[in-house]
Image (cartoon, rainbow, N blue to C red; front, side, top):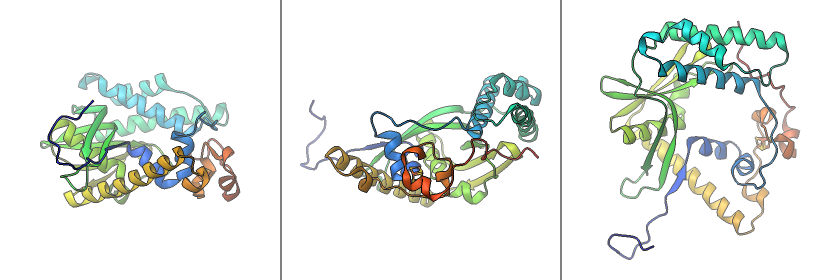
Length: 286
Ligand code: SF4
C-alpha cells in the first residue's frame, strides 16, 4: 500500500519498536538478547528463581491493592493479598518458604503503612507508548512498555517502579535508569501531562529512590536508546542474512552469568562464574 502524504524524494527512517527491557538486555549481553528474542526454537531456561517469584507476588499484591476503593487499601489488606498471590517456586525448602511468605507480608504491609495507598494512581501496570528521537524532527523509536504505577502530584506525573531485590537502589540508580526515563517520556505522551520525576520503591526496606529529570537528561537517555536499538537491529539484520551468531551477538561474561537463565547454552558464562542457587538473590529477611 502506498504511503499517504507528500513525496519529497527522501526515504523516511524506519521506526524501531523497543521496550526498555529489550534495550537493557542487549546492552548487558548481546548473546542473551539473541537467545531470548531471536533464536527459534527458543532455548530451554533454568528456573524458577525464588527472587523472581517473590517479586511477582509483591507486584501482584500491590496491583490488586490499588484496584480496591481507597478506603480498603490498608496494610492488613496488603498482607492478605500477599497471602492470596503467594507462590513458592525456586525456594530451598518449606522453612525458607514460610520465612519469606511472612517477610513478604510484613514488607508489603510496612510499605503501605509508611507511604500510604489512599491517593488515586493515574495508572497501575499501565501500558504506555511514544514515538521518540533525539532529533524531534526525525523520530527513530517507538518506545513502549508497562509502568508498575503512575501517580500524579501537583499536575505532573510520577513514574514508579517497585523493586524487591537484595539491595535498596539509590537516587543515582533512579537517575541512571533508562527504563524509568523512557517510561517518563512515554507516560507524558500517552497521558498528555508533564513527567520529569521517577521513583524506585524498594518494598523490603520501604525506601524510595528519586530522580528529577531535566529535558537534557531525558534526551541523553533517548540518544543511548537509539544507539542500542540501531546496533541490535543491524546485528539482527545481518543474522537474518546468514551472519555468524557468535560474532554478531557476542557473550559478555560478568557476575550476572551466575543467575542467567540461559547459561546452560553458554560455555563462556559457565566458565566465568559458578551457578547461583535459585534462592541466592533473595533480599535478607532481617
Ligand atoms: S551466561 Fe552470561 S555471557 Fe552467557 S548468555 Fe548469560 S549473561 Fe550472557
